[in-house]
Length: 241
Image (cartoon, rainbow, N blue to C red; front, side):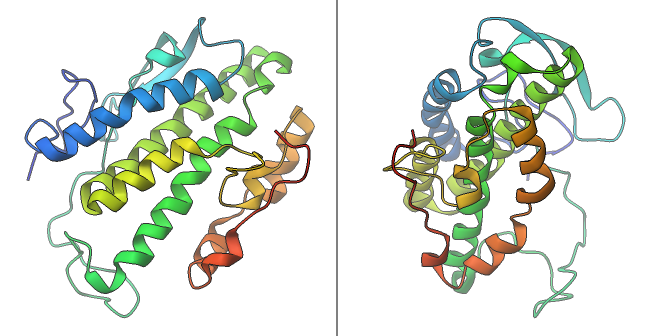
């Protein structure tokens, strides 16, 4: 198992999961990478792709010195795969398997459920960026703008984490699901995001505040939707883009 405290910044994808040795997953992630950048350029913050933005970039996974700050154009941001260090002897803390060693591979009986949970969670990350892409032009202050863009790149980082897990543990199905995460669009008539809340328009900051205060509480819905896949499907209203 690779040393998760060491981050490899030499390759295309910064990571602490040993991609240099895991050729199958590295190839899958590097194949996915151009599509992600194309998605970001077309659906990320509108009007700000070519401007340097002051952002925080993770450079470690420990509590000390884990990030650096500087100006970077958002399409050049170093997204990657940074997992928390493994804890020796860690056990499952709750549920039917409480007290058993944490899983290193996906148990067959939970495979479909865990894949679906990853996909639903992963789908909210790019959807959030898409919903907020117009807000930079009307930010109330520079402080708000910088925080907005930091949230956007962090949503992208969360998407990378979900895609890594799909690529690592779910084979061809995971690769197809990862591609679909870039294919769907928030509010699109034909290819909407999976949860209805993330298809709502967010044209101004008041709508954004109301969304974050009331609507962005989807964890329970995600979990509750697993037994009934049809319950999370959404049909965009006529005329939506």
